[in-house]
Image (cartoon, rainbow, N blue to C red; front, side, top):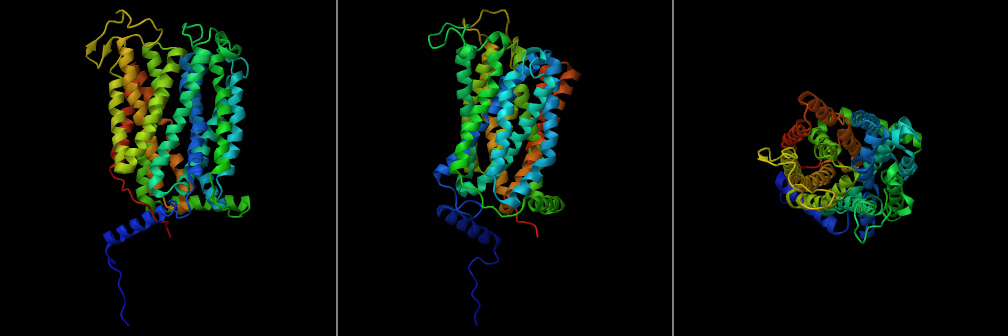
Length: 495
């Protein structure tokens, strides 16, 4: 009997090429990266549309509208308010770091993801809506209760991210993972843009300009004097999230349930996490990526947290300027989602991350080179010079240059987030995808205090906002160097 040897047997390169061809063939036949049948177009779009509903919470509450209102008006002291806002996010980060990987492992055991997403959304919606009652000076709900609700929402938001991200490899064909990941982030920012534009026209600009499309008074009886134009951000984000969660629940297919009782699923999930931790040496490549991401993600998060704070402090921007600033950056962040998907599908996830992290570092350096009295560190500008125009915002040359540079920061930061998610989807073993997305969340939150701590300490030591904000470049560069040691290849499940 003559044994037939398949061409290329024993040749790792040939075997790899064969696996690649099979993956392409399965993808063309409508299979996802997990080997199961991919969702149809409606299911894929509905998956991405969840970010359209969820991400405005970040833009309206965390970055541009509610957080400065909470710090400056509810707490009443910008310094103490910023410190408290940091404590709130640190508290949420600790809970997320402890629970996220275990919840992901439980979901892997149970199989289904959408019930978890629905449950956490039902927690988020009433808490976000209740932020309307966060009154000036700590009246209304009071500072402790408002802080507690923000912590709860932040935790639930992170958990929806774990389960939503883990659906991606099963929803999309392999060659569309990068595109769909970028599309989700692009839609998230697009939704935030629409809400910010609505708030600008309906609540911020009335009484400030006499443009024909701007109402003479804020709509719905909103009172600017009691900061209702900022407080309304909570109910708006809550309603938006509720409505645009429905397509995901209705049209995106979920993994089949395993039929396990919840107690057994929890025990099995905890055991899987423990085994994963014990076998991390088998997943050294994934671990190297998660460690690198931990640093550069802390840098990206610090950029989001302090970018508006830095601009408001340097240029004395108020709610009107910050709303317009948020609109413009969110519009360009849509381009970042598209750019991230294109870079990923064209050059691979690793190269895409290195490109976007490098460009983010450069644009931050440019940003801190600009103040009301100088541009690029060396070009002087007279703050008493005539204004460029009569509009009540962005009417000096340094402000315009800073704004232009910030648009590029928004593009590269968003692209980095899109590339990072796709990178894990390409590296993690498909059988443990949700568990590894739990570890992914852990790597993004385990040291969430590091960026704010670095910025705060450098600012205090140097007595300089510029030095403090610029220090995030250090975290980005550490992550950049770490990515150099990561191989873009999928791990196999440990025996």
